[in-house]
Image 1 (tube, rainbow, N blue to C red):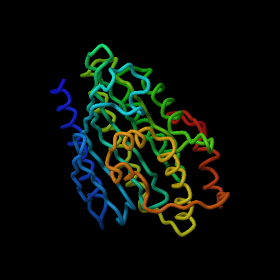
Image 2 (cartoon, rainbow, N blue to C red):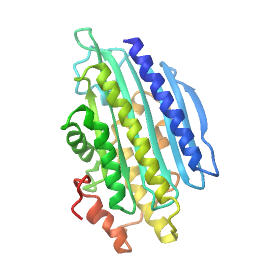
Image 3 (cartoon, rainbow, N blue to C red):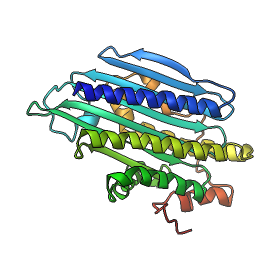
Image 4 (cartoon, rainbow, N blue to C red):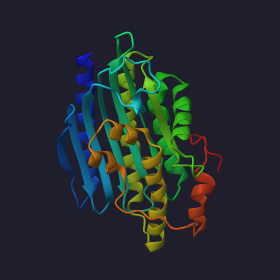
Length: 304
């Protein structure tokens, strides 16, 4: 199994470097700061963060490969693992917060867990996905995003995209607000039933689809003119993003429960955010976000 783990580790690090290079080709005023770190309990990673750019307020592309004696409850609660079973967890976590309010925030995560069953047998599973959080909605962006997700899933079965889209809609949902975080994408966990090679191939297809779709949307929106009102709207909506990550996100919980590096775990938070009491949209376009875009929808064939 170690050989397969090394394959995944190398692939994740390659994607990290490729995405950093692609974003730096778009960004004109800042570069990523690479911060290698070592975890006392075992393993480490490289946190890569860009802040204060002309295009990106903040972007993080983080690789981690950690190990330990006992898998935290956030990752082991639904699995029949051996008591104090050792584990390895490796993954790539990406969050991008553009400066322009018309450019959406995006998130992508791909990961592999390896542990031992209660019978002492090796157990592994992939998880991850990607989702999009716009502040001003555009149907063509939603269609492009979900077509990319569907294309990544299609070679693995006609039922994969609908299943993982539904999972994403249900997962990235703010229960206390009764609204989704964004327009979704795909989300999956416990993926091992296809065998390692096929699951690994899907894992790679997810990161490829994310990069292709998001960079296309980002480059389309970053030059849209905006003013103080649009920026204010963006900061208020970013508050929803923060609420989800700190209250509901299992990845955040896993990082904290596994005594991970706090700065890397909280990298996903935007540099500026605002909470205004009972804030209401000021324009029809802003109201359209919650009235239309933040609804469960078939974005391959939108009804609007």
